[in-house]
Length: 365
Image (tube, rainbow, N blue to C red):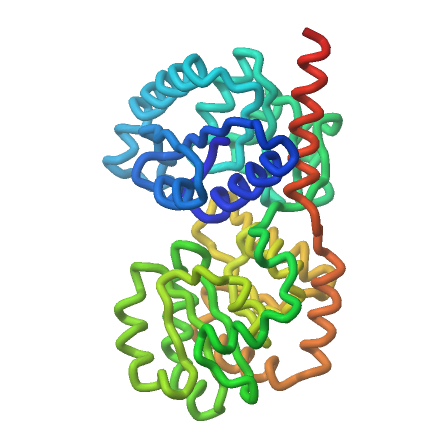
């Protein structure tokens, strides 16, 4: 399993590995990530071994770190070859992120089954290039033949954490876990696994209004903003306004929430479709090819979300949030529409695809 950098690449890889393990308990796994990134912590916590490559992305601005980029690529390809030789994988699955490219490149050349799991509606340059070499590409959106060979594409949706697949009966546990009241509205604000400055700064401006309007808040800030948020909510904690650097029990957070404010990362969107919550999306402008806006617009065309531009969020988020949460008819409509876009068994579909490819290759040999 190769990929990482953010939760959007790590959690699908773990979900696919868990699904394969459930089908074939004798399978041996090795994850390959980028040194210093969050996968080096999250993957071992999920019970899997991981190796790190010295790799990072190429910055669009002229920076000193770009001078090291060619050396990182050479180093990563060399280590990927060493990992391939010692581990001898039957299949290599890339879920995106810096480490995915070298491992898939090496493995496709050496004859292992190779598969890309592309989460976004607009793929990055690495996956576009690798698509010519891998065996299959599992995607979450229609129309991906614009970017990949049509005969290799399988629409599977995005794998998500198992615990959010069913929220039935979890609302009361969520209220207890976060120390909230079931008699007041609850908003969940999340900026992805690393946090989102625009969302955080916008929520910070709204705290007094949350208090005045008697609305509760579960706020995932990411590590970088947590101390600021922690100090800010100290005045309001007894009013049900809570900040966390990272939420471990996201199923409880979704179950408790009446409305979700989120970035438009592919995995976040897949989770929101499954949990059927009305949501406001604020796409990050700081991602390759503005793919979060493209992800969000795929939902807007189905009248399934409200979208706010990043540049407008600090001024508009409070008013739009409080207007929407008090509009039951609109919230119900958004819940129904987003639920129609959910893929419920993605990890198993991908796992079966991988095992089928391996079996076919073994039969040929």
